[in-house]
Length: 203
Image 1 (cartoon, rainbow, N blue to C red):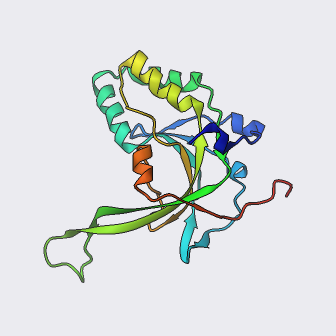
Image 2 (image 1 turned 90 degrees about the vertical axis):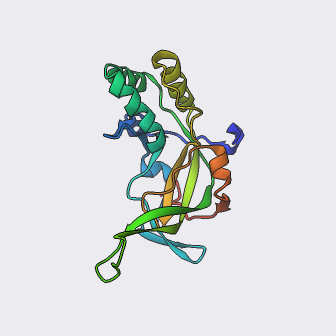
């Protein structure tokens, strides 16, 4: 997505204090203040005739679960690099611009489900397909490419190309949202523009 398709919004002072958060699994996210997104206070919203849940918190995933495994494997051999990773995260300027529109994506995912006592025969779990949908907003984060480049150059950790930066706003059938590993991955999810209400910037 070209820079021209993003709308630079003023970043409030409190937003400048937000720094990436590193999870126990070594996944890394950048928290996003809901005020920047201008979403109405609502638990659910009907979109395309379906009920979607608004996310309780908002973030951009910088390093998701698949890439976090690469980090864990590296740190198992080089535990001294964990502080170096945190130093790199602190040194990067985490500015961003958000797209001025949202898009709907969808994906079928095979998941394991534990059978209830009433269902149980054999086996105890079954594999089934779950159709998941999300509404996302793209983001332009220059520091994301810097992070991946420095990890590769300074620590020898090759995470591939950065994922498409985005914030999940609403979800259907999966409260965690849909992970997006690449632009090709995103295209496979049939992204379509969708209108969602926003709070006026004057209110």
